[in-house]
Length: 111
Image (cartoon, rainbow, N blue to C red; front, side, top):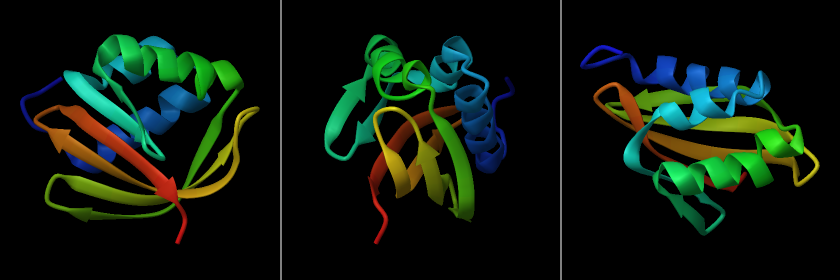
């Protein structure tokens, strides 16, 4: 990856990795100490992100669809639909980008 990329392209790459069930691609999008905050449960670092991918996302046959998004600097806010064996519904999320990687993905309920 380059030194700086369009933050929305990283979000779309994350969605493609989830929907194609590519755990390695999804994990590799994050900086080494990046994290996923899934409604308050925090998974920090590649090993814990991989665990979340295995239990709550790709390993649960997740499908993610972005319903709308907005960009503010290096933060992409999304509203998305999620279908899996663990959860099905709509949520909001905030992706934060540092350089050419995701530093965080915070998920909360749709307001």
